[in-house]
Length: 290
View 1 (cartoon, rainbow, N blue to C red):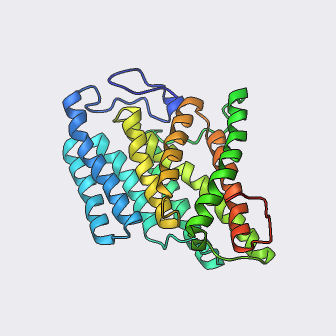
View 2: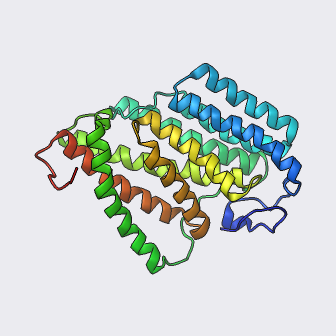
């Protein structure tokens, strides 16, 4: 994925950014001012999701969009897309409940939170800033295959220690029947895919239209971590999630492949699923060290 720094050329097909010019992107002072609404947006995610403080969270979200409107119209449009997705997903209970009603409710919100920003950007604003590159035509390198294996190993040694020793596995339902286990598997996988669609393909791509890659990555990682903290990854979970989010965006930038980062995430989540089943049923899958 091409980098956007200063007035460097943009590969819109690779990066998920439109070829349209972005106001103020080459002006250092303007870019510095544009950080304010982005920081407010990131702070709103911490309040809304991690802190579960609706009033301060929505106030910060509104402040982010309003300040962006007066600073840069293009930034306003892109932050409005992110804020819209955040508002939609925050309107439903963000929990690990795997009851059919809640899965339908949260699943609908997740589809809308990704789908509406894409549709508004593509057909409302006439841009193609958000893309989901699946069939890239590029073969995965040997290093990329080795990294997939490494993800499983890292998950095997890290997740049981985190989930079981801290007790956060109790944030997930205790299931032992085939139907419950199937819904837990479906839920963890669906959420993992959505994380990449929203935080990486949508938020990261939109932030990159205005900020250097490292700043864009930090902003999306704050959103990513805050959401998963509310979901159940508490205690010292952010020490795992934040670096994971940073690496996922960095890999997406390099590979330009949604398929690859989803594969990474789903492998990690598969280990998570096995750990959760074992944590609630200690005689099952007794293969972990913790």
